[in-house]
Amino acid sequence: MGGAACLARWSALAADRALTFTPEGSEVLGDLVVQPWLLVWGAGAQDRVRGVNLIRVRDGRIVEARGYVKA
Image (cartoon, rainbow, N blue to C red):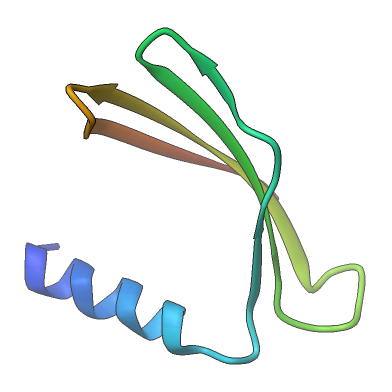
């Protein structure tokens, strides 16, 4: 998937009013940020997912990011 396709996908997710994305408390460990989050798209227990992003920061810029989901 190229850059334009990634941008289009993330833009569509961000514009979806049915989704509620809630970042939770982050931890900063040197140049690593651990950012847990919750994504909800409906009222049922099956309409939500928890995840975490691991973000490496250097000189105020994100240089690496990985996301994991508990499904």
